[in-house]
Image (cartoon, rainbow, N blue to C red):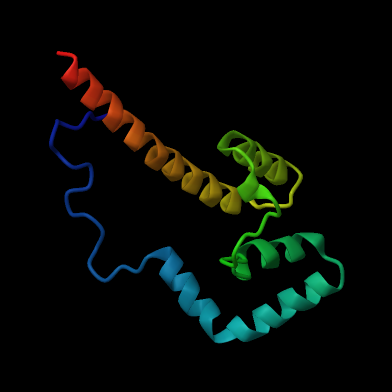
Length: 131
């Protein structure tokens, strides 16, 4: 077996110019039949083919994106700690999606930082005064 020298390509000529990628070739072959293939896949899924149903739902249909306001009754009356615990509970029981929960928890994190800033400013001022 021949060892290559550092910096020396194993294929110095590289891929010949004009050579198509296999994926591109496959796409070009399938493209004219796209509608028939989608129709057939849908028929298979509707007739009970679970694997085809999973493929259609997971890969072809776009993920549902909810950007509606998230309303949680009574949440605003709770302490910050209880609000965060409530969000975790609602995520665990499936009421909130992981994405919704993540957005809410990021907002609470920002709110916590905003609430801490005045306290930190007071402490810094106190430390400067006591020097």
